[in-house]
Length: 564
Image (tube, rainbow, N blue to C red; front, side, top):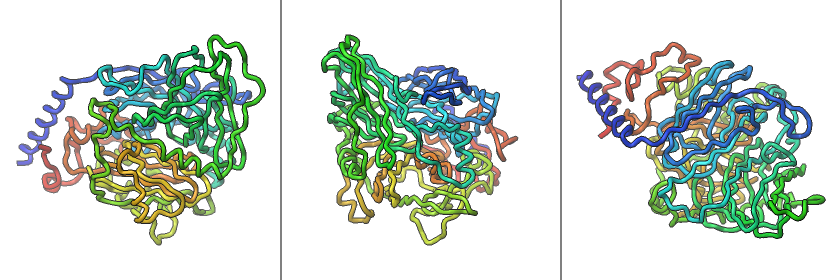
């Protein structure tokens, strides 16, 4: 009976493979060498992390449903991983590139990421996810273009630029990591970079033409405001969703967020400042780039007018955030309108409250969520799950709400069911703006406000055209609520994008689980998977979709089902 069951499951998976291959999308191949190199973003020599000799790294250009094959060779003196901020890795959390899912690439070795940009469009970025590597570079933009037959709700722009903005430290990334390892918090950043420079970056435009700017905050800590002197910006896309096309004189981009704007070079032919400033901080930082008209008659002179950086800006930023809404009639990655998914009519199965916390543990500063400060296990959680390695983590090791248990360390994993529809409420009791990211998903930001969330706060939710995205801000002493349809099986990182806090434990993993073992739900473990920790020596399943577990066959036959 058991043999017949296995035969039927194998047959189902083979048929799914045949169907997938027959409709396979194009492949794009990349080879990236990751090295140290001298960089001078602040005018002094620093050790940076380069990709193919570039800082920032090369843009990753692709089209909806493309299959990407990215061979990454690690020339550093320490393990390395790349993660893909906003790329959902449908059914494929193995390729997510965070330590909870993927073994690091050892020094002198390579790993080939294989992923599909299934049903995605938009602007994203990649970054190094281990330690404080992000403080040394290693990041770059991702552009996912719409397929030619899918209409886009604006004329094709005359040019397409990536703007990577973020705060920056002059200290080496290993020095910064050492500070955190000794239980101390980092001081404020030293500068803001625009495409790897504090000053000196430029974008060339032609008078009368319109350009798309893809802007990502790839920094470590600060929310940033961007403006282009004399020009208005038309917002057209946020992390893969076409937006209502409001125009803004400046835009707030919080850590980990991405968006696209259109600008038209309709001013007198000269150079104009692009100004990026930090928000909600005591120490004011600002950096500039140049919007250069190719027939410019005048260079910039002096300094641009300063941007008022104080706590009163929170109310203005909150107002702007609420104005960012989905264009319901535009097609997304598929021909059907974005508004055809009526998220506001779906019953919520579960509410999860996320409250950020901090405390001393053994005399050292730690950060946490719901009083649990995440500690990485000796084995990536996804591999421990797939090989059924006991003792690596426990589902339910972080509660849905912050309870009375004291602040403590733990490898926190929250279990959720496949296809549950969940409300997550983030509460921020700190005086800084928090930013949270969920791998594997795009969620609907249905509400955000000052004060403490209560059930009555649901009366203010936007249940019609809230923006879906993968990273959301939570203002100081405020809350943000999201809805998320958990339709992507895997092990997914939910983390603070304030990178020092993430490193010191402000993260956990969401285990989206189904007992139905089918390639429709989750791809099989990659044949080139790197095994580390307690997964070393484990036998990789020899055929698609069947996972070899240590549990006895009787229990397996009870748990496993054939997906119809």
